[in-house]
Length: 125
Image: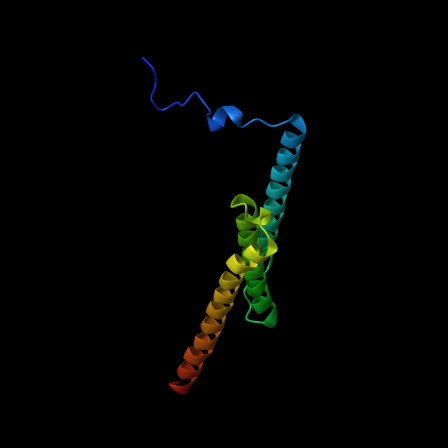
């Protein structure tokens, strides 16, 4: 009985071979991605453990650092794992720029509304 889920002739799986040099390049790229994302995560964890919330300017800087590092990780994941890094520069900008603007907008609204709520709390006291 022949399986109907296998296509023997002109199958992509049968033609998906590459040389050892290409395999080494792919493995090197995966190792670099893994190391970079691990280092960024370790920095974030260290920042969360080492710095305590004390209400000073330093805590605001730490929060901003978390946001920036998380955005860097997200952009790198999109560039590498969704193969956006292999595309032309204009396409990268068309895809990443609206997300960057939206994230900045959300940060602005969060800060603006947070200040408004704090001001209202001070008025009612």
